[in-house]
Length: 482
Image 1 (cartoon, rainbow, N blue to C red):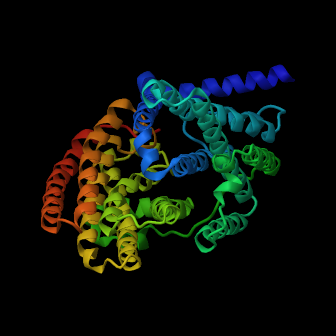
Image 2 (image 1 turned 180 degrees about the vertical axis):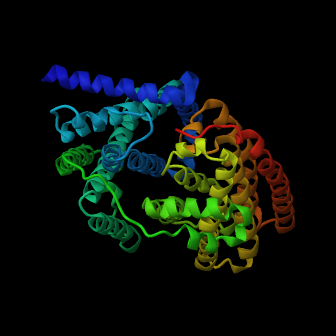
């Protein structure tokens, strides 16, 4: 039995590697860990400056918070398993489907899948990060024991986030309402960090408490929680899944009427809207957009409270990052169907991309407006609101155009391609940096900052027109499929 378990684990690792290579190539599959290594190297070389400005405790705290969120992102495995067991993905067959054919429990397969993902992503991200810290040690003068502690803390924090997310996704298969209630309870508990000055949640769930008093208990508690969450999630896995089927009334004609403003695109736009609504993806798409934006505000607020100072992340800054996080939302829109049947219809890929972009702007426009207006009111920056709204609008248009131009309908995989990610980085990062710098300096040098922002936004609009115009040529002859 032990040999079988080991064989299943090895096969799953090979499957993961093969999928990565098939999507992004051999070079692309190592590009992400290489970037993590380089960023870690730069970060730890400059660690003395960072620690001097914010303190060791705060620096380690934010590294661990980042690891927890990364684990949460990776760990939503229960829903992945359910989708694989209840949906067909073209010609793709995964080892998760083995229980359909052989006398092996789905819980056992999911346990292997969880361990495989944990090991894979540790090697894919946490270990390269630790290696960057280790290589920097001759310059940063960090001891081997300190790097080892950082690695241990990040590994535990990552596993904590991953196991918690795994548990929540397992619960959602039985009751989505219960899952959302638990999420609200978690956020409610976190909010106590803002209300009670002596309530330090990070010392309870994160290894960060070790840097406070050196007690090994702060490593032991989260390890116990990881084991508890993981085992509970596996036990909650269903052994049998009902094939999902729903009946709907004909809505394409009425939906076309709603999108009549889109002219010739109204039929495709109605199709995309109905697929999004009927797949249950509307919630994830909206939360995939607003969730990270609220998360950034939460982290900045936590940072300000922890340091006891106000950091000038004003409304313009928050408007600038809206487009960047819109990439996730556009990616979600490409995540609900393969559209392979359209290969036999008089429809080109660029037409579907155009329909998805229109739907993307319809979904994110009001959310962007509400977010910037809300931030402006909360921070008392009504005077910056018009400029922040302009920044949010233009940057959202630009980043969406860049994303569609380079990834088409395959955003989920092509962003891991080394060439695509490099081009995306070159086009998106410089204007974002300019906007962030100008937002920080606008209170001190208003005219120069205003002129910089307006020139940058004008340049982005010009580039956007060119980028949107190049999408048909790039994608018109591409076939539909994963």
